Image 1: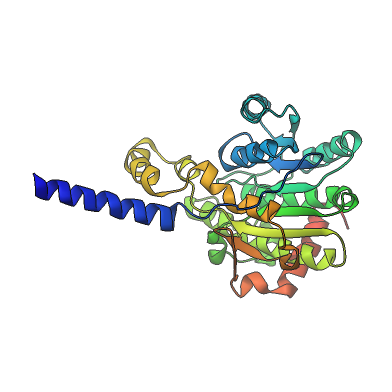
Image 2: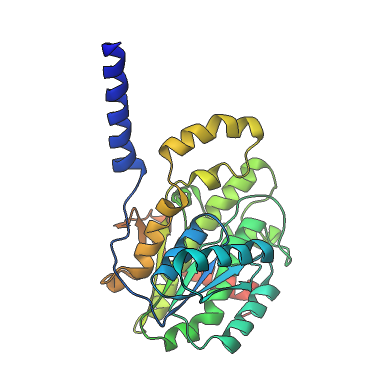
Length: 318
């Protein structure tokens, strides 16, 4: 029995060390207070988006939950108001799979909100289908919708003084590429709808997030607006969302033990949004609340510039 207890205790200590030093991830250390500031967080009715919105609300910000599902978003706003004690948390409809909806959201926001200090492009998806404008879903939602949203709100960000744009990417960007001929032919970065194609479309879209951030920083140089991209970590709630029942039964116990919960997954986004002194790092990529070097493709300024120009055309901005 003593041997079994020793093995169990050793295993428990090992797990705690591994979890808190590797899987748990770093924490946002900023003590910034956000009273009088306004933040927009896309995809904030669940998961890390909701955790981000809650933390911003706790710090006193006026938080706009920019989401597609009204019922879930209003429930999330209620939860956040109750947990934070901040009544300035509200829902505004935004469907990133529709460029018309992005324009409608931006028009409503600009009419009703006098300032914008933080734009957190958090929403993301992996899966089949087409957007309302005929683009592949991952490309249309993860990149193009956020691209248009950011450009439409850019003047309001500039008016606020020291403001930031935070684009949530993913480590899987390393598997991504941008094939403009495929995009021109298929209105997508892949040419099929299989599970493999959906996975690769997600990877490609996450590379687009990084390239967009890089070019945005170049174009914002000399202004008071800075921007950052990041990998939030592996979040078990999101990892298991689209799995079959038997896959969930196998994965969830492991995921709960080792992967980040939504609060943990929110930390690097919060670091990029709030950390003092990182303004000179505008355009750069973060993970575990620390600056990280990106791949050669993620540093390709010519590719980033072309993606910007093509995205402007696809959004009808040029």
